[in-house]
Length: 194
Image (cartoon, rainbow, N blue to C red):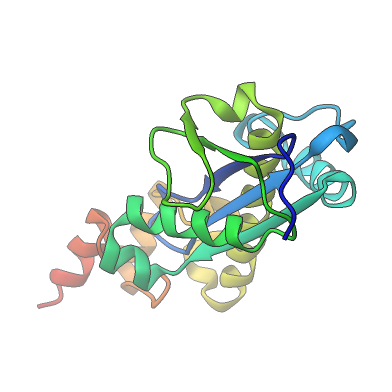
């Protein structure tokens, strides 16, 4: 695998806070071929804009990869460690090696490349913005798939976050295998059954 000094990889995650579903991370190397307009933190973009940008990122980036950590890994490791694991997996799946890796947030996974955490990187670094968009769209797609399996929880709408309707459904129907038992609202429901 060749390494270029100009190759910067941006990494971000989606899904740290929800009560259900995996956490996703993406790694993106844009390089000089970027030419992408409208990159921003995925949370401030509409779903339609994120999907449009996803297609552009996938076609124009030098390399990109998306990975996840499962609900079981979240519950056994904790959400921070599971997020770092997903980030590490994404970087390791890249088709070319980066010279350095820029991570959104405060913490970096252990990688074989120089890494730097940047708070607010999803706003200030194009590669991290692109990674934010890929991670968010992939997780949203997965939550729509889970909605088909568990329609009573509204995953297509709430994406697993702790909305009023989601918490009420948890209390009424109990936790599914895709709920994070280490998260308080789910844990409270699970242990109230004993």
